[in-house]
Amino acid sequence: MSVIRQPGVLGRTTRRRVVGLTAALSAATVEAIAVGLWFTLVVDSRTTSTALAGLGILFCGALLRAGVFGATISELGDLLEPRRLAAALLLTGGWVGWLLVAERIGGVAGVLVATGLLAGVLVGQFTLERHVFRHRSPSRTARTPFVPGLLLAVGASLLLASAWFTEWAIATPPLAFEVTTLVIRIEALQVGVVVFALFAFLAHQRRFEQLLEP
Image (tube, rainbow, N blue to C red; front, side, top):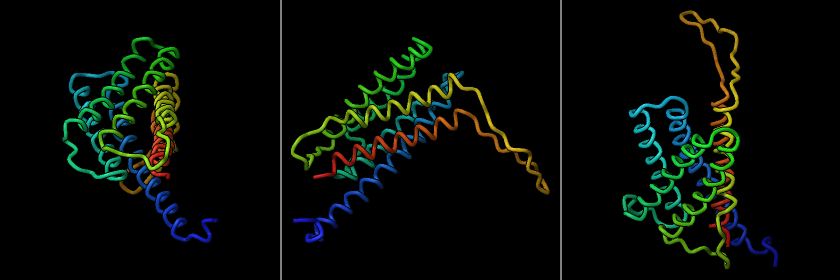
């Protein structure tokens, strides 16, 4: 029987899609802001203060993303529960390790190796987060979040490439106003953050689609 003859089924399907897209957009926004700010602080020259500030931003972003995930697929609960803190710490450590490995090896090889390692960490973190929130997938077969982890890691590699291998910038002609002159400047790193945000949305959209579909 088609879903046209079952309006309740069609309504549930539409609701799942809306919930999934909203959650994916929220999670991707949090991820892009947290990772983007952290990356901007530490990618070039870093000090102890910027490194600590970046870690704080990254960890808070991981907690907020976990909150979005928990509120979507189960109950939000206490984000400071030890197991949920462990999931946030794993995500934070994954990002830090990704950048350190890339810097240690250097060049294109460093980006490729670090991206592969990050993809593995993200797949593990996504799986851990699902168990931490005691999610039971409605689908008959449990799916490993390989594609979401890979998408997010690819977005991260493009972000790193925009900082390491690209130095262009676009600036508008000076825009004169009565009291000031405005120049809009767009750099490669800023474009890299936007591209990363897009991949983060695709990754989380795919992830929530897998978790919410029957």
